[in-house]
Length: 402
Image 1 (cartoon, rainbow, N blue to C red):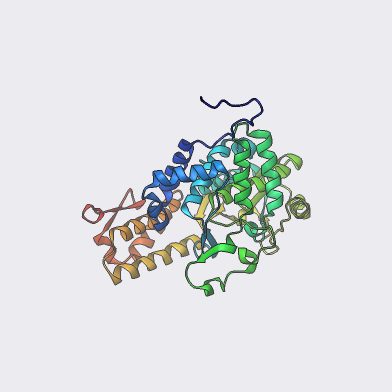
Image 2: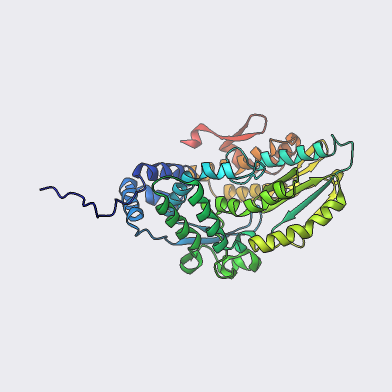
């Protein structure tokens, strides 16, 4: 006799669908296809995703080890790279919530949003200056601010309360409790306790303590490198965005992660705004304005924002971006002189150089790109690559790309 469900039995617990995990896996795989972690997972990935699905739905899923390392470009930062299976879970969560976040976020937050990257943010700030100055005919001023040690000072309890309330109010799918459980696990996971250090420990010597999870206060700090960290950071700062746009009624405001810009015709108003913003950040988000990164000046002196310098009628590439591109070329030159680059190394060269050329091609930089490439790139590389599109990107020669 088939066992029937009693009226007194609890209803079946809603589950994460397996096809949702597969979708998250393929999205995750796009960006991390050639990493050792991703390649290892790819072996029999169907079985591994089924097992991951069972763990999530049974409540036995645990977060694995992260790999901690230091990167120096574009600035020195500490990265915690999550295990690939955990990255799949990150994509799963963001896939479920992102369309709701988009309805919540203001138009002018630019980080980690589809169609709103660095180029979009730079163009928006340029437009703000032109509008506020009436096409450079009247005075206006630019206030640029930065959060001190932003990711390391995000308060997990505040973030979780915001996210839990958001999901309760906005997310109506049957698996709500399971989604909240995963989010809470991700937020309160401490990757420092169980991580593998990649490289030498002295790589951290030049990194201030305010920029390292190893020195973060209890229940503070999100790992840079996690997809969820970037999106959850936007939710964390959403309170500031709405305070500035709606409570203060400021028209010309834009933010990229923890860098934000306000454009206004009254310099004294902007001066009075600084202590208000300091107070709001500290009381509401437990964050501190960086005291050495408060810049207030006339628009004619330009403003540096996410890798560009915005001046009247002209946007330049920031010196830091040019310097980083130069050092990247020199590093690739050393590789090509040491040995014949493998196919993988050639693809990495193409991706690296094209990322810089892609940024620079948005602006009047043809002469700069030409000089940077032809004055600095080793002749060895021309055996494997060629330029196309008016110095906009490198292509691999067919014989090398096989």
